[in-house]
Image (tube, rainbow, N blue to C red; front, side, top):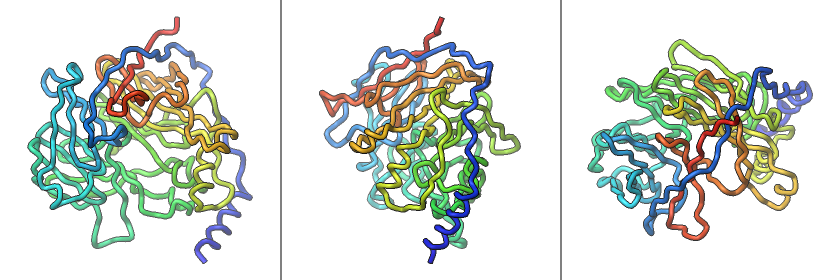
Length: 376
């Protein structure tokens, strides 16, 4: 009955649907810069740690820069010294078996204040790996409203005062257009008393359509200078800037290479059909802030070619859009297909580093510096 109802609703929506607006590049856009491959940094992985972590974080402690790398399976955080990549420390959580079997994500506020999460539970640990507090991120008195926390490289948590800001995906049906009316995309947790509330919602571009699972995702970065979160939604050429208090603005940050995504025209929950729909659509991905150059890097995923989908080559080619501090688009660089892993990036004084699988050594974690170069 539920599927019949949704199918009927989707039929009405799609039959009334007007053409989506085309990509509109502001007339003042001038390509001023591009990204150029530079040096490579290599870190050594141990035999228990695979290439590919959902939680990376650059950590500054005094004069030393560390790349924190989480092994989700073992729950061990590796701290690689950026200046001396062979130097590595480990943080293992001593009471791990008592509290959780797997860590889904981490946020290191400092080396003595580490937040890790498992499902709807959040834990605060010290630098020695001792759990000193835990939080529940589900309201047991109202199960009808909940949102699944997401903490990692693409959706980093942020502690501001006593409030921890955590991105989340509403626990609702992706295939109901009303999903995108949800107002539970951000969890604001008071770390002192453990109370939390929800805020933030999808932009108007999502409303009234069905986009499936993959295009429902959103990503963000944080600017310490302006105290603003900057959001990148999968289907939207605009980015959204907010302090989660009294300000919300949007800015064009679209690709020069494609137009907008189109919503699903047939209702399907078949994973293969859904994923092929996602591959056929252009989309936007992570956004990173470079405080050293006061630039933003937004990743765009180009639609896969039909022959790639048929041959089951399930990778979209990526480009990186470059924005200045006022969110003016100043460049876009197409990345070679299959070369990089855009889910694993960090930024330091050198610039943007992006992971590159090492085909000759699976135990080596390699990052390539993409340096900003003036076009003239």
